[in-house]
Amino acid sequence: MITDSVSGRPARQVATADWQALAEELDEYGCALTPQLLTPAECREIVACYDRPELFRTTVDMGRHRFGSGEYRYFTHDLPEPVGALREAFYPHLRAIGHLWAERLGRTAPWPESFAQWLDSCHRAGQVKSSQILLRYQAGDWNALHRDIFGDLVFPLQVVIGLDEYGTDYTGGEFLLVEQRPRAQSRGITTALKQGHGLIFTTRDRPVRSARGWSASPVRHGVSTVRSGRRHALGLVFHDA
Picture 1: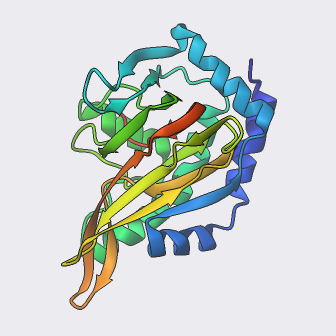
Picture 2 (picture 1 turned 135 degrees about the horizontal axis):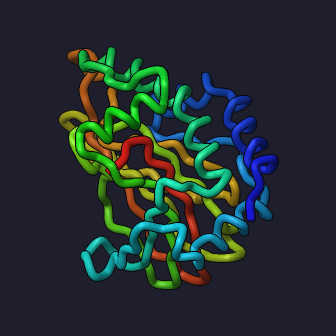
């Protein structure tokens, strides 16, 4: 099992990241790679959780729902460490970026300083289910472009963490981000997730500069086809379902 003492180190990694640089990368691309948050051993411990069904509230077969091909599981609210610690550590930094984005777009920023208060708002709005995801892809699997929006309350950013070694444990399976630029063709970005590193990315849309000031640029994400091996990833979503 993953212990509380181990879980504290990834949270410290989040706290000591260069958040100015990450915010600038998010402004430029809509996504940003973090430093290494989890060791290979910690990644393997999280992957091992997949075979413990008591940790999850449901399993989704992507092919059955025409989401692509592959499988993922939603954790219960009783999150294993360091999943819960990472989510709480990310929240204040992503909240600051979200407030700046809302200001640029002239929107309200409903995300309070306390993460617990934000989750309480989700629950009072009927979004009561855990949205933390552990994903498993085999060779030939892929994830269609989509957004993780489960209700009226949406947090503007989320994080995916690679749990296997790209190029060794699997090939293909790059993370895809597609953005519809204002009055322009869509722009695509691919990212190979390094083991233990996180990718922060836009949940629904983000502000981009245009001739008329700031405009909202819609964004969707997915995963390219896994060519070989097996790929696991941890998805941290900051609004409940």
